[in-house]
Length: 124
Image (cartoon, rainbow, N blue to C red; front, side):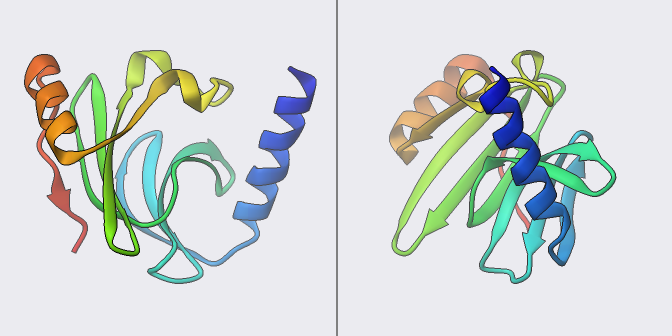
């Protein structure tokens, strides 16, 4: 547990020292471009400009509701889908507990229909 907290602290310090632009937010979640628009990720805001990554680069679509955050991530030629159950997430939560995915488009559509996930929207 202590090692995990130290690792999270190091990540927060590294991310907070970078140039970043906010592209979308639904507190405490924020889509940020760190140093470039090829490094767009979904982060959990821990204050003072620090974020803990929930879905790594490159986030291209995002959506949210009271219960969920949904994300489409594309790297190279492949894309994956994720959702976050907000009730399971916090700044000290293990992301593996709250973040579900990666899913293919077909798998995500099935999960989305079952859970009533929000629609995805472009960041542009």
